[in-house]
Image 1: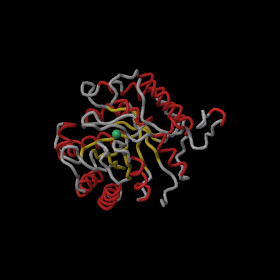
Image 2: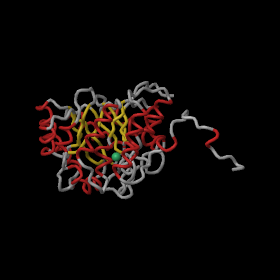
Image 3: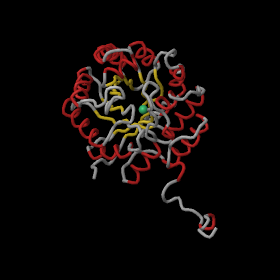
Image 4: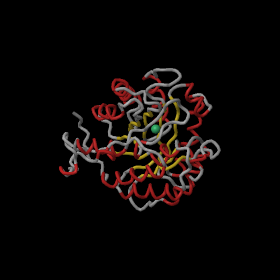
Amino acid sequence: MTQVRKVEVTEVGPRDGLQAEPRQVPTEQKIALINRLIDAGVPRIEATSFVSPKAVPQMADAAEVIKGINRSTGTVISALVPNARGAIRAAEAEVDEMVVFVSASESHNKKNVNRTVEESLKGFEEVAIIARDAGIRVHGAIATAFGCPFEGDVPASQLAMIAKRFQDMGFVGMGFGDTTGMATPPLVRAGVRAVREAAPGLSIALHFHNTRGIGLANVMVGLDEGVDKYESSFGGIGGCPFAPKATGNICTEDLVYLLHEMGIETGIDLKKLMAIACDVEGVVGHPIPGQVIKAGLRLDLHDMDAVRTAEG
Ligand code: MG
């Protein structure tokens, strides 16, 4: 069993979740959801993305969203930045942390950001300088870390190489992005170990998708390996618009339910989180994958008379 006693959950729904929605969610609704997450004790939130509004119109209101967030608590507010231009906007908006991302595979990176892996890594050097000058921490995310929908398996040596470059640029942490839900327990174990060895100075976060139904099984392996940072989305919404059949980040309420049942602390009020997820369904306007909001907590008991028996 894991030695991990406390986990930092990053809620990526406002960015990774809402970005994938065809419907444009009004800025005030995004801000309200984020402020409720903060009130529920979520320690870290990926609030938005400073991408080109042309490429991702759902995130065009990035600066306004950050402006509306209650910053009086300790919740860390991070934002995705694809390049130096995004980093300048994120620095102006005064985010706490910037997240840059590169795919482990050449073909997915080309498809996603139209650059080679090396071109992306080179571009991050400029981001690192902008962030350092603004006193903002940088995390590096590796997309398709556990497999590429176009190339197949990703060698652990590729993950190690990219993580080492992140460390050399002064990043504080790295994340494995399971962009198309190709992670499996052995791949998680191998990837985490390879990165730890290559870049021991980086914190490690795991971002799984439940595309094939084993998202939380992969979390269990991460915990077993001592990883104490996980990323998930309220209601399990999200995916990657530039990857085929990629649906469903693991669901934050389901993750927190699992962690709490294991006696692992998150600092999150699960009931409040579940109430937020229920409202997310209304915001996106379609059913969402989260399971605990449907079934309730295991000790939410039922009135016997309210349940039909076999005899009817
Ligand atoms: Mg995701």
